[in-house]
Image 1 (cartoon, helix red, strand yellow):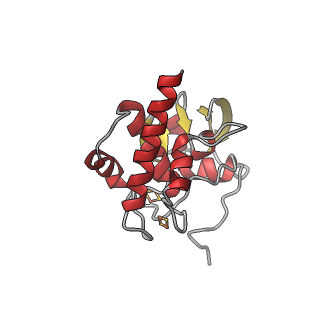
Image 2 (cartoon, rainbow, N blue to C red):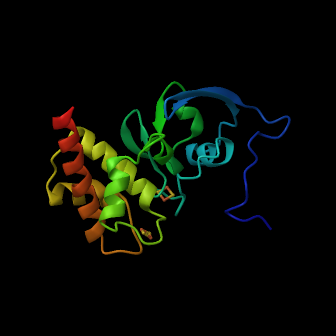
Image 3 (tube, rainbow, N blue to C red):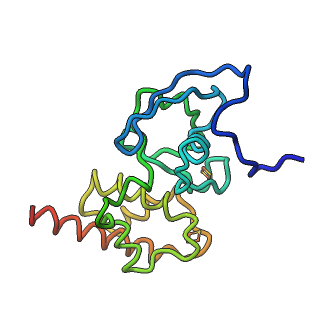
Length: 177
Ligand code: FES
Ligand code: FES
């Protein structure tokens, strides 16, 4: 019996029609031949091994699979990989650089914004999009932005504090630059 969590092979089986798809993922252009039915979340996790993008529901409810699609948050379980052809996708793996964490990651660490961590990559990507368009959000604005991301562990308080911590740090970095 097959399971919802069966591993999807990185390449489609022989004889299955594919479409050549080029996506800029975390700044690197990736060209793959993908089955038209393949979800973007599965392409990221299975073909590119970017397993930081989580799947919690597969029905566009939880937000664990959130990535940035051309800079805007998108639930990658509700998009086909071929729809990303010619577009850019950013995942949680693209946040940190070689030597330091992104301020959003630091904020989650400082303010204890995670417990099991399952929702965390999606929360962080949504937060990144928010802080790029609104560097000084109110608590209400953070809560509104994160309203499509569910956390089953926390009361959200520390997640909100983490994003506000990151916002402050990013503003300070901007002033220093
Ligand atoms: S796995 Fe995509 S919204 Fe839950
Ligand atoms: S930290 Fe566990 S689901 Fe959010």
